[in-house]
Length: 79
Image (cartoon, rainbow, N blue to C red; front, top):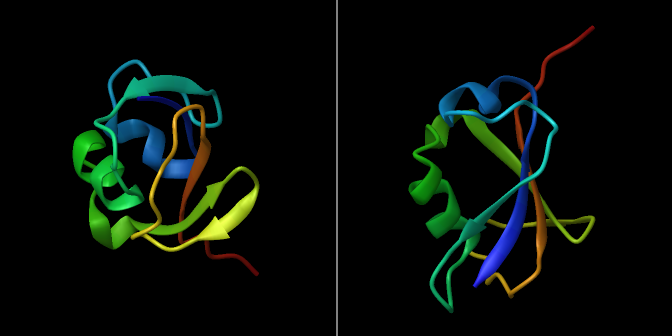
């Protein structure tokens, strides 16, 4: 199945030819979860903190569906 992904802030540096905030498509097997996506993209688990699927916050075990739009964010500090 094909999904669309946006990596935000520092996460874009872990995937070749990806710019932070710019969507890209990826193929995953049917039944894949957000956890599978993190592993496929080889993102450091300790840096991944928030997932959005179709604009709603979801947990790492959320099952993905064909055509989903996924945003992945690191923990962001600020003041």
